[in-house]
Image (cartoon, rainbow, N blue to C red; front, side, top):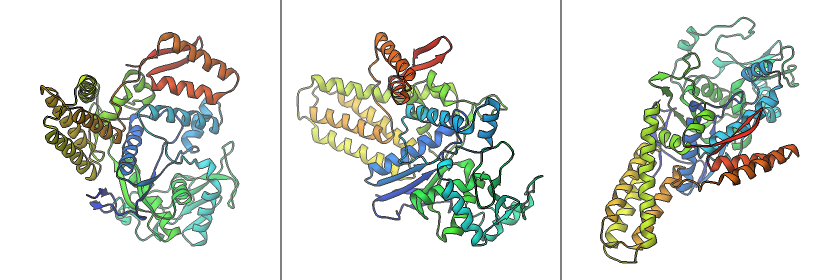
Amino acid sequence: MSIVIYNTLTREKETFQPLEEGKVKIYVCGPTVYNYIHIGNARPAIVFDTVRRYFEYRGFDVQFVSNFTDVDDKLIKAANELGEDVPTIAERFIHAYHEDVSALGVRKADCHPRVTETMPEIIDFIDQLIAKGYAYEAEGDVYFKTRAFEDYGKLSHQSINDLRSGARIEIGEKKHDPLDFALWKAAKKGEISWESPWGKGRPGWHIECSAMAKKFLGDTIDIHGGGQDLAFPHHENEIAQSECLNEAPMARYWMHNGYININNEKMSKSLGNFVLVHDMIKEHDPQVIRFFMLAVHYRNPINFSNELLESAKTGLNRIRTAYENVKHRLSISANLAQNEEKWTKKIEELRQDFIREMDDDFNTANAIAVLFEAAKEANLYLQEENTSTTVLSAFIGLFEELTGVLGLTLTKEEELLDEEIEALIQERNEARKERNFARADEIRDELRAKNIILEDTPQGVRWKRQS
């Protein structure tokens, strides 16, 4: 069996053919770190974490890169409002991002590059585009000549002439054509900036991902992923600048996850339905949130509501209960060989069903349906008068194997006693006084893993158990 991926570029499902046998290079656009992430940001984190896990399950060596945008207009605005500098704001919310997605079962990327740490490569990338005639400098700004790339619009399947009809040159912009986009922005007074051949300034949004993907993964990668909202203009512009410079395809497969709606309405701050992961994981089991996200195919929109989250909780508990029942029976079962071949064959069929569904464009919704079927079959087996340790162990192995691919856990961590929590909090306080922030963060993460939420208040640290 082969993995099939829906490629946004061709709008077709295609059999995955890696650039290098047995290896996969994946780049996923990460967050702009000016605030806590919302559940819309959490979806690509969960989706592409699962894609990565599945490739590894199928025997591939995965190189996974996901960036942080740690300087842009939003960060500058947040810094001005809070009276802090941009690096301080970025560092705080990068830490918060790792903390929040870790609770959701998302593993760290092999590399999390930052814009501020990739400035030499970004400047060099822009300089080369100018030298090749694809970009121009205008009073300290640098713009990409969009019309110079003949295939512009191929990802979003839009005609460049249709795009031009809606394009405008904003006041203060010095570009030659309304479709041209900024590669470098001249610094404004008081803004964070870097020296460049065109004067002090900072990168435009799109150039950063092109430079980081090239630096860490090469001119052409296997898969480029992100939310549906990034397909245009962000990914379209990445393709244009990367392929003009490198004279090679930027990515062979483009994957985009669907939107999230809140109670059937588009999530937005103006509607007051903006849900932060930081708040959600204080009230809900993060594993339920992950299960909820994976219960819908990644390309389909998700409608979020408390009722649907409760339904996800029930579904996950159904699988967990079957698993725990099998484990309990194994602890008391004799090794009886009755019907072993029939049941081990059934278990292997379930495993192959799971692989077949995941091979089909990472269909986690159908893969979860296989887990429900496994729970049903396990419960049927437990009704038999005599059970075999071989079959019970095989069921346990199946549950652990398949949920592991999806990044789901089957058992909750053993709860800490109140006095153990207080002792760890005291140790964390001492570590912070001694400026041993690494140890303080370790303790917070250890408590978070055991569903203990810490809240720093003027009256000291408070904690509560997460349901």
